[in-house]
Image (cartoon, rainbow, N blue to C red; front, side, top):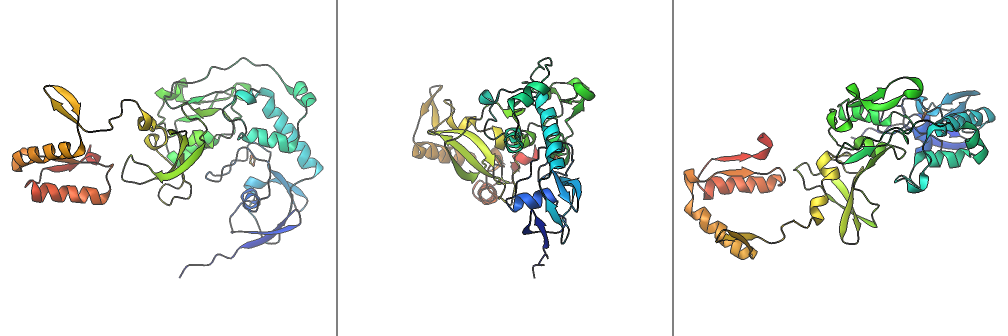
Amino acid sequence: MEKVIEKIKFKIDGVEVTAEPGTNVLDAALENDIYIPHLCHHPDLVPAGVCRLCGVEVNGRVVMSCLTPVQEGMEIKTENSEIDQTRQVALKLLLTNHELVCHSCSANNRCELQKVASYIGITAADMGQMRRTRAVLPMDSSNPFFEFDPNKCILCGICVRTCDEIQGVFAIDFVNRGYDTVIGSFGGKSWVESTCESCGECVVRCPVGALMPKQAQPPAREVKTTCVYCGVGCGIYLGVRGDEVVSVRADRENPINKGSLCVKGRYGFKFINHRDRLKTPLIKKDGEFVEATWDEALDLVAEKFNQRKGDQFAALCSAKCTNEDNYIFQKFTRSAMVTNTIDHCARL
Ligand code: FES
């Protein structure tokens, strides 16, 4: 019988809400559609409490909501003058060095920093007062799938924690100290020379436009489907524009991948609309490949197979096929082709 988890009851700004035990105040508020500004928190990661924007008042004390677990009967206030002042300062310090090119930034309209600034409220005078010039830092475009712009980075550490906690790769970290702190790889290597596996998990969690995919365009619509790269069967949404696939988004509701993808599933979609893609079978005639129908191609394959039964035949299954396809293929190889010489690409 499924265990029923007793929910904790507490109040946020006088509104009675509930959450599962162990939930932090920030997640509990967001689950109940109550916004608390935040930048360094992501529900998939262990809270770090570095941006200092998510302060709330609990029993007269200001605490960081991402680091505070909910308790029965708690009375939480999301606003007071001290919280407001702390947020203003934290936000201004973040904006001091942030490259303000919102209209040309690919993260425009889905940037968490924009959302926080609009919620907290920031004036042009505030910006002028705090702004200080710093040398434009070079972008790292070495990775074939995404690029990193340190001028837009807010040092929230979500990318570093994603690489450590979710991927276990530890490819990036905070580099240098104080004002010179940036995100980089060990030994000052470029992103592509690091141990990065290009999974893009950090890119999808970046709250601003510092880590952006190179080839994604906003889609006009999305189609829910299954990744074709291997037998795991990760759930994805293909972003479509016109009749072209322009993006891939992982399905967080899918029980198999729960929102994660590997480099192939996330970035390897250009083949779908590639002009060199084969759309019909080709049969070699007089040294040249010529287009053929499926019936012609399959008849030819059957004829050749008949000439090569037993020791002259070997089969290699594919991880792109389902278990059922691979089962049928080994059955065919053993029964119809009369050989046990069959292997699978996963053993490479
Ligand atoms: Fe809590 Fe950043 S979200 S300190």
